[in-house]
View (spheres, helix red, strand yellow):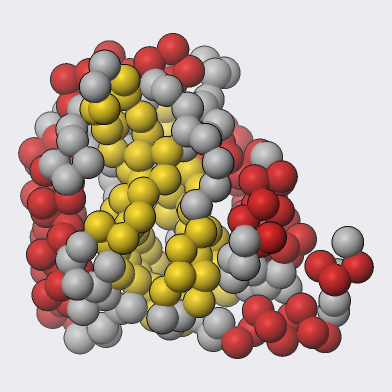
Length: 258
């Protein structure tokens, strides 16, 4: 399974339209590369930027709004799944941090509302409505579970997903550089303690005085970092063998000993 993780620069001074255009440029580059990804991954609330809390209401969109309208044709054109990061979704009078997962036919396969909203020096808890439950979906490569940024600090969510059969975790994030050590630690621990592949996509750049950590990564079921970006914007490519999940669980049966 070949994965292209788009570690996008979410900078001050860029409009949502400009960020959408930038993502389309990157998708064009992926197409012309001939690398044929099976999955493309984008970060958390990249359209308006996580730290632009005052802009959430104005930039909120419907589930199949402008972000979906950009990504859906590309999923079909490239014949790959796209985890479109997350959007600020407007549902009636409520706003959610909503992850989009699009199938290779261009149709919305599933969504996930961020369950743990960040409160430390953040307005996310004040503005958004938290999600409930966990989401795991079947794909041709195996069962994928989804989470968003701050969720990484809550191991019970990942246990619940592995109990639903998750073999790969996809994480979209806007994690700051101030807590980079925690980011790297949690990525490895969530993978190794559940013997799952983990692929995370973080933002790059500086927004509202906050420097994003970057360092998107792919971690094996044994907790080894298979690929890791640096701080700046990039496309991180990784090839993973989903058979390693069952191999790890059979050779070191920690999950069976729970």
